[in-house]
Length: 124
Image (cartoon, rainbow, N blue to C red; front, side, top):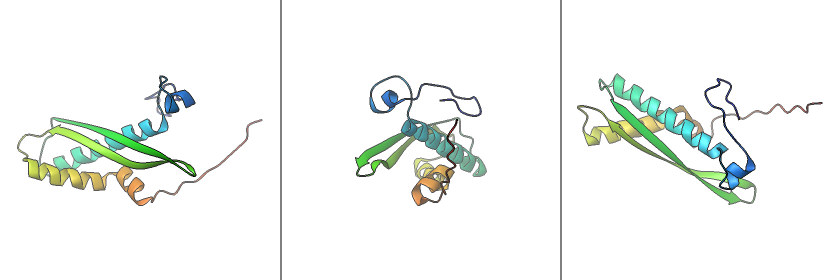
């Protein structure tokens, strides 16, 4: 798999998704995108509030379960740790929660608001 921007290229297969083979999978990529989106939203909101974050590290744990239609993502757990001079824990929690709700990926996943279109073409 290669991203259009060229920022990532790596193995992507049935084995990397359902077995312990090297490579990535759709859920891992979604988790990475969600963690990045949240971190960027958090940094922007903190800067607007007058804080200068020195470090933000976010991990997303994507939970997937099988059902009668295939597989379904049932939850994404974001875990973030940040170093922000002058910010207390209570305000950090409040701002982080706001960032979680403001992040574009959180909004799309939570609301199911993203329309998904498909153009299928069979190559000859």
